[in-house]
Length: 193
Image (cartoon, rainbow, N blue to C red; front, side, top):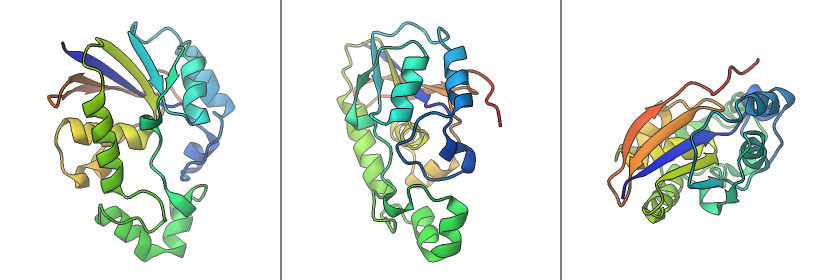
């Protein structure tokens, strides 16, 4: 059986708007409004999953979904960089940022390396129950990018070339190690700056 996996990036938070590495924070007022306005725009799903972070659960609920929390969809662990902006970290630790962006095995922040994230999300994708026809998964942009890299058997360097906006939808189709990218969309509603 073929599974349609609809990956939905969570709505904006204060960290997203500041271009900061995320912490477990709620949606901001505009993000909550955008997600609420998009309720009813997703197709019917046989299974709805979401990452355990507050921003993912709040996005799913605002969309009118009743999700099951799935630890496999948790965000990449950015260790001590969480809460800081990329500009701050680049000014304080330029060599560490360069290593993180160029070496998929590097984890200078003390968290999860890109290789680890790709392996974890690849395992999640392989373990997805192929008997489910349509799955909606509300998760993080990093996780969506990693799942796309796994689905199309791209190189780790490709991860940095995939842009996933808040509330955007990415669709994978397949199962059992035969996934394809069906498409990616702009945000379900226009985000406010």
